[in-house]
Image 1 (tube, rainbow, N blue to C red):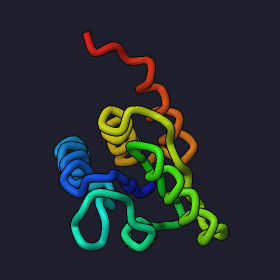
Image 2: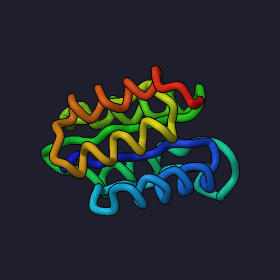
Image 3: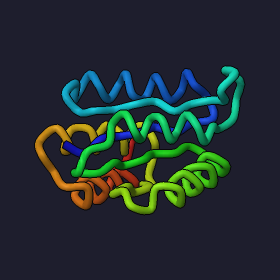
Image 4: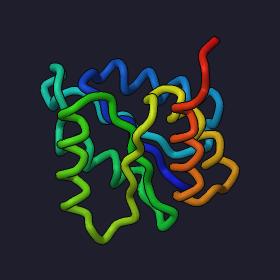
Length: 126
């Protein structure tokens, strides 16, 4: 099953998104990688790397990020794991993660998971 990692500058935000998505798809392997190693705001190469390792399978991992340096730090992690099947997903972090978790739970491929998550950009909230 495709794994999911949520990268945020805030540990609480990343954990909250994973918690919410887990309500919809509890069987999907998900991990939060939020904040710095000391608990402060920022992004941690080590936290992202550990999260990917924890949810990784041959099906791959989709990574969802909040802002600028979360993207840059995630890109560095991907460069260090070139042999892995990992995709960064450009979409709203909450909506995209939930959509991805649900289709991953149904056995979707990494490409399908990414496609569904990216489609969340087009979903109106009202």
